[in-house]
Length: 509
Image 1 (tube, one colour):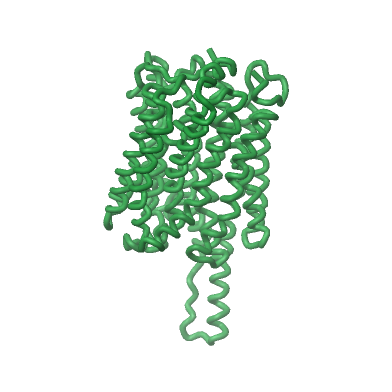
Image 2 (cartoon, rainbow, N blue to C red; image 1 turned 120 degrees about the horizontal axis):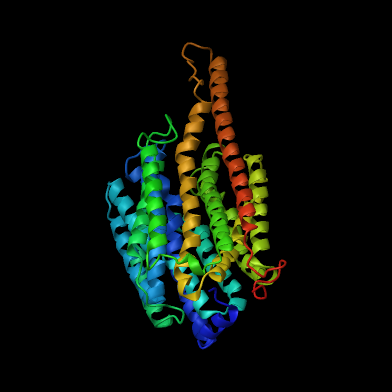
């Protein structure tokens, strides 16, 4: 049976207001810490390439560093969210922070090994991935439904603030500490402070937590399915094909393991998430919308930097700064989305946000080299920010209190899965498409030609390359706009039985 706002209020009212704010503030700080590291490699990726002696035109060789973090982030969320439902938010947060510190040490001490670096980032993602859903679940524990939306917006803003500051934070710390590895060494004192704050500020036991068994088999099967999908999508030679030679088999294996996961969940006594008490239509609609938003976010984070470096001729921090307006608009949208969701309902805020983002991406596709690009990035970022709090609010409304941890995990898992697909599209389809567009383009033989003719031939060759890049990026952003439209369509499912109109979330149940 779904919980009501009265039940939630009864569970949360005994906690003093000041203590609740302190607890959620500390939880938000841990979210920010993990979010900084989620996006920090965007600004120092070229430095990592240099230190590992990898040419800048072989970006796909460090793709596992990005996908490894995302895989860890995704795979651990449902299981660790479920553990927080069983053992409480505080011990799980402390354990995850300790694991985050261990992953940071391995990342910083990885030497010239891409695989040690990837392993360290994966451990960081595994531990850091639980911090957001557990904190969102903590908001569900401590705030009644009618007051929860704004709190969720603030937590979502902390996550998005990491995306704003992460690239610039990475560049700044790397410059201050003499290299990108200093970013991860700095995590150690930050984690130590965070552990002390969590232990002091969070309640010993969240009121909505249950003591049932944890579905280890289900969590393992889900992690294996996601891992096989990542392996299938990783292509070290994207110029010759979209998928690697083993890609189809790995993806088929992922489907088989995913089917086993579904069968297990249907028969298991203790499930990773028990859908028997869940409002399925809004829950699944929220997952689909979150997936689309995640794909759009990752495409923007990576592709806008590439546009800045190739079409706009910017390098280093100047290329990162092109993203700034988009990144600033995200947390602004997240806070406003939480405020609006409590007044006009989650569905319409989510639909509007994804429609705004779609319009922004359509405009970006036609203005890649225009001064208007910055304004259109603000529109897209603001639209994506609007949907963060409403989607979290929907999954918490759709699930019983005892499932808040794993429910919060599920919406973030869907978002990060979208980000994984975005990475795969950039490193496989995008580069493969560029190869198709330039397949008949021959480097001009200018030796023996007059100087004017040499310049003309080289200028024509460079213009053809720019045209190919322009076409590739335009198509990618148009596809992103369509993804946002699909997400808006999925958001139309965010209604609960008894909802009649776009009423405020606090009155719709």
